[in-house]
Length: 348
Image (tube, rainbow, N blue to C red):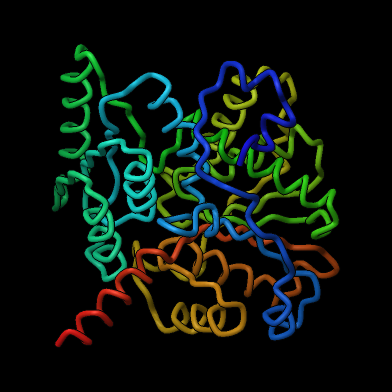
């Protein structure tokens, strides 16, 4: 994309904020017609953030990476360093896009779940050349944090220091990616592709996506309310963190717009699953989305978000309202595994 929506809305910001183009065009928005009919709800829409970069690996984290990796390129960083859960969606996006931009990447990982989904994404990241070290057990997260901190300190005084990419690519620079996404949505509404939603429902992990959307809707003065479905621990997915990140993003952009805390709410997912694991209800929902709308859900975020939406629609909580589901999961790693298995079976 030659110029993202953020820089069209705030042209002066482009002079001081590093950015690299990864997303070639706006991600699609449209009504979920078949699913709406199945659920008996007229106005359910989707924004397909899985299509941010459909060739290597898309998903919502590519939004963050346009700004974080843009900083790495601008400042000639030697490599990108991050800490993340083993087999996370974020790790797949980071390693694939670093490969695309010829940036070496090193990962310090900790194990939240040794599930099939986690293993698929971990293998996918290795395919793109990531140097990965995994710390397992109860102290894994602490050891991964210590190792990443030590590496950052060691590289601080080198000729080409590392570019630190925080867990989930969530810091104030990363949040700008979703300010951009929110402004992109506004342009699509102006073009008449969908009506302005009354509610946007999105998964919440490290809070970057919801914080960016909150900042964008504040700039737009939209009355749209954001519902964030907590998909990980409430110790990370916190209301104060969302507000802090959104306010920091507006400050970085030179805006004095005041955020209305009533414009978003955090709710807890109702499936109660461990990280990146499935149960029968989740599988059935996954199959419905795939069969009716050709959308693949994941066990960490999107199946929990869509399950919450389905329950609210059944309870008629969104009666006569327009609901936009913000779909964040890229299925590139899953499709890569399926293609690899098919190739192996043919060769045998």
